[in-house]
Image (cartoon, rainbow, N blue to C red; front, side, top):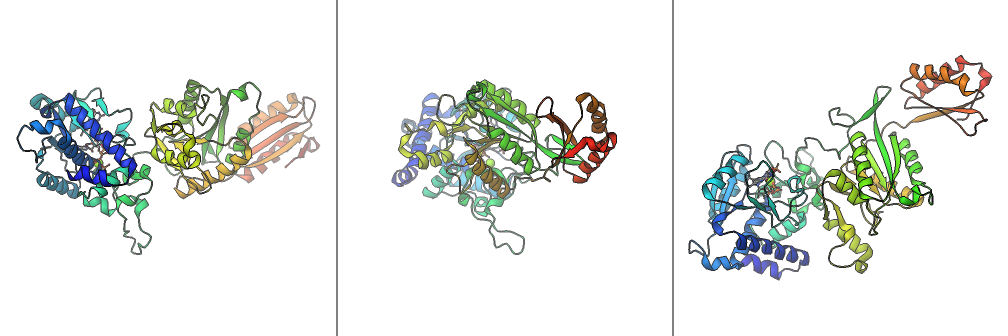
Length: 508
Ligand SMILES: Cc1cc2nc3c(=O)[nH]c(=O)nc-3n(C[C@H](O)[C@H](O)[C@H](O)COP(=O)(O)O)c2cc1C
Ligand SMILES: Nc1ncnc2c1ncn2[C@@H]1O[C@H](COP(=O)(O)OP(=O)(O)OP(=O)(O)O)[C@@H](O)[C@H]1O
Ligand SMILES: [Mg+2]
């Protein structure tokens, strides 16, 4: 068969493995269910197009072919279902119908919603398993295996996902190597297709020469980072994109003088810090760096190297902060539990990430054992890699949680610069007005200072006023922090007025 031959003759080792696994899943399903009990869910998208040809190949290679019910070994024996909707692209509709004719599919076009259509199919046609082109990284793939019963609340059937572990690159390698037709929208810059209301060409494929503003797009297979295949889907809300202009985005912002401030928190993972053996230098350095770009640090904590401790803290922090930075606990050691903790806090599993694996392979090559590198297991469906030329491996970002692997301040300096560069280049960085601060020392007792300072805080709610002493008997240091220097100056004048002027001297 031409599909099997094309894959066998190509020199893409990774694709061959993926192909063999997918064929195995198809044959397993055909051993478990009769051909009358299975259906193929086809919608003209690239993933279901791959699946169509895998099913053709799988069936050809399988024993079932020998007892083909319609006695036509050339035909496609799987009942095929297409949920056609009025909001589908016309190109998708005509491709789907064209393919049905070309490959003699027994295609049933369903005009109801998914659940009702599936219910009817199960009742009237005794369907027990449905092949789907779902892949890891699709929002609907979270928690699925190659064989996954339909979700609670859905009609009962087995979802069979032969290409669950295929990457975007594998999909395109397969379609191009097998030279099979695919929907023309993919040549116009569409990389994942939903409805006409929520899908546009992927801006990452826009060519630079669009003088007219109309914009031309490169074909889908040119997208180098498959993780961004859904960038052409109009977002409902993505916490991975920071925006200060939107107030309905669920982000928590402090109001400093009527301007919103992005909030961050820092989590250090390390038993050695909690036992006092090692001092955490990274947290304070991050506080200064975040401050310098105008982001407020709401909390900095240290947790133990324990999955539940990490998960609990991440869950708390990520829902109340715009960004969470987490340091430590990254690597192959038993104590490196940070990624597992993050996955647990999001309720997803760790899944192999091909692209990250490739970076690690280049970095540590033969040193890793077996086929799968444990360090390349990343939280499924929520991970984005932040690339930078100066980093040997990209930084990992899980929605609004960024993982830093630096172990000292020199490494952190470099990682920080790369993080800022990378977020800026992908439009995710909102640099706010930097904070301005001033410190005064006061020769006042706490009792003398307490009430006037409390009143000052009420008069200047937009200025963060803090107090500390370097020694119990030394002077009191009063700090002022705001994004507006004039407000700090006014607060300082107001404070001076409450005492005799010699009581204060300015540090900076
Ligand atoms: C045959 C079939 C079976 C599905 N089974 C389930 C299911 O068990 N659970 C579920 O939450 N969604 C199920 N869905 C819905 C899909 O997960 C998803 O919402 C749909 O494909 C739309 O994806 P899109 O928003 O990316 O276009 C099913 C869809 C189809 C076509
Ligand atoms: N309207 C539909 N009719 C039938 N099957 C569908 C429909 N929508 C989704 N599916 C099934 O769900 C799978 C996953 O959909 P998804 O949109 O992620 O992939 P795709 O449409 O094949 O490719 P793309 O990601 O490029 O849109 C499809 O491969 C198909 O099996
Ligand atoms: Mg689709």
